[in-house]
Length: 90
Picture 1 (cartoon, rainbow, N blue to C red):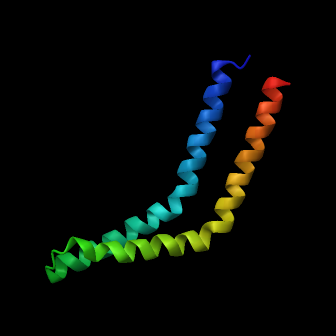
Picture 2 (picture 1 turned 180 degrees about the vertical axis):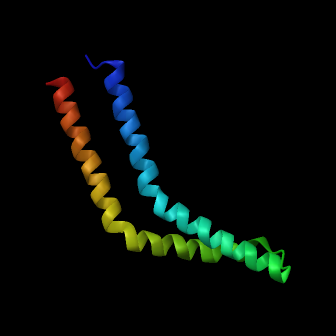
């Protein structure tokens, strides 16, 4: 039987993996959104759809740049998860 501490450890590792793998795209969107907001404030353009396309492009660019690292991180998590399942059940 798996203890609650072991389940909590697996859940903690899963949440940390999600945060770490999503961070590059979120930070890129945050940075581009900040730049576009500063641009809109200085030019007094109040169109909300202007930030949409640059954010999408920044997210796709970050995904292309960091995809190898993300796949590596996710495969390491999957390996640890399978090993922990074998340890807990076996």
